[in-house]
Image (tube, rainbow, N blue to C red; front, side, top):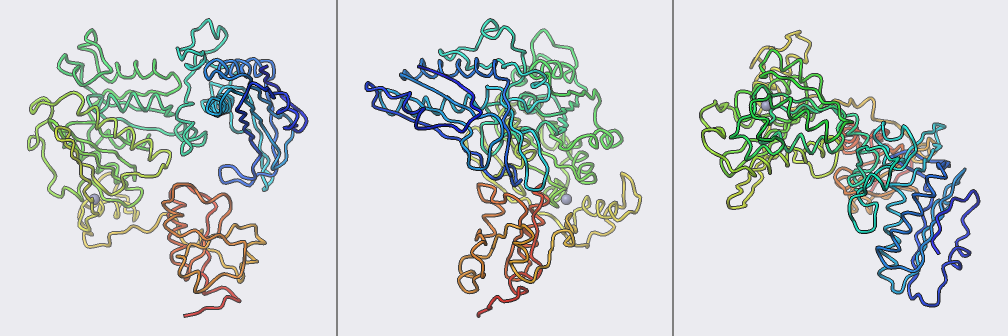
Length: 550
Ligand SMILES: [Zn+2]
């Protein structure tokens, strides 16, 4: 007995469970999904579910049938609430009866995952602050995907794991499906939306560029710009796997654009059939959020570096040589080291051979281009573990790798240029190179303290202003000077900044001893795109009624 249903009434779990009772089954497994009080940093008050019921039931029953066949379970059932739900209400219930526990667990997991991704259900969240919004049509992070409410084609839609054929879904439009990356908890629908709104420039459509273009198109980047002036040559094909022998002689950027569009029609592909120079680079780069350098010539790399430092755009660099390569991310937007900080004596072309002179094994640029695509996705979605101010060097012949600290140089001419350009000298692209080489090595933080620091006399004042309070001091400090409120969470600074999960769920006030660490942490988080985080000015020392010891 397999049934997929919607319910306007609260879900009656004991009754559903009784329906699945079967004396031949030794295992029963259920999943209950509940309405929680927050999502994506917003405090949720209540929510509404709406479904396109005829199609949703059809797809839901298809999922149950798949689970029964695939995991050899006896019965599977699923109920999803629609209408208005309160915090804590059960939104979805899945139950499975099977001969043994393992099949029951796996089938249950399969059903809830597939229901989340495939069944057309929309959720409207109502927030504490009075706003509301439709969210969580996870498959539909791409706008064109929810133009209608029909089920989409999914490669896992039949029980043998074969791709679904058109006849299985005769009415299904062929749309990109990001479900496999959205399923990652660090990505989710929010990460997909970030990719959708990102613009990435790929400079060079050769060995490094090919994997970058494939992966970023597949991932659903909003706009992808391709720069290359070269035409395809037969000697490219051992490493440039996007192209075909019949395409020899055609411009690579145009060929890559065609392939990328066929991979994912949702991505806006722009081609720039030029060789980048200092004149055109500024105009082109300024149209994008992030640049990926996939060139094999050093003068272009340094020119791109200079332009991106001036425009404060992040760049993911890579170069390969025979069997080895390196990866470096330059973050002028984070006051990081640039290429000239690391290579003050700019390497000239010819000092290090490029592929045509030195030779290269095809997969070597493939590996480094793939790493560039990965690092770009991490930056765009602000995933943990970004390379930061380190250079990755890898020898693929010996499979040895090392990470080298890329230090910001105080006498870097590029940073001097940017400082003078920022100072409003109106210097345009040039600036006065090297004029202030002795100036400090840090830029003023992009997030000024005035916007982040708040003054409260007591913690209760902050709680009354609906702040969640997080004490970022170390455990030892907290023992010495505890805060007089049970509603304060203790999360050490390092955890807040670099922890695996995002601990900030809403409007948050960070507290430390003096207000310095909480200010720096808040500014860092703001610059990483976390809104609504504030620092208690003066820290614990400034609070009334806190006994300071030691
Ligand atoms: Zn520099």
